[in-house]
Length: 113
Length: 114
Image (cartoon, rainbow over all chains, first blue to last red; front, side, top):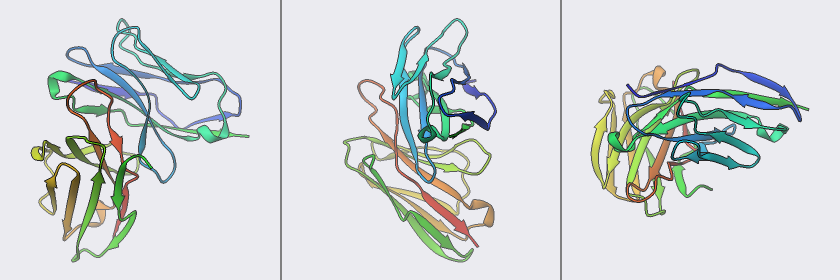
């Protein structure tokens, strides 16, 4: 079946530390891959996306590269800020399933000053 | 503001009450979704409407009843809920045609059943 697996949280980092949140996927076909972010008390917001292998999505200093050979889409940021504290969701969608989305369980990130 | 508006933001209701959640988008999207987000559980897709037609009902109890009167509005009618139904209910929309830009989510309705 189609699914997304994210690293377990919560993750706590000091400001300016390097961030990696791992995401791997299982999909029948060629998915599009997404990272969403949820700030406290809010809904999910699209952070970045990649639609084909080797694409790199980037936004607000965050990056993720679509790796077909390892079925991964790890989220990275070189220097996190307190304002990056949120829950991060990896997701995939497939045309074959009508572009229904499959979400990971979310990874909570807390950045301390 | 994301372009998807959910009201109310917070709702407390008794188990015998009837209430409705509302979702509205004017982004020109033609698919709308209800998700349930509970603490420490994955996002649960509840209902899918494509071009105003319900295409999925993921084994959701009948005490949840969706309604999509037009492509811009989506409702979730609630009655005789249980305490375990307390959660954040998220509405999302997207454009089914063209490039896959993903969902646009509302800010959610925080529901507490007492």
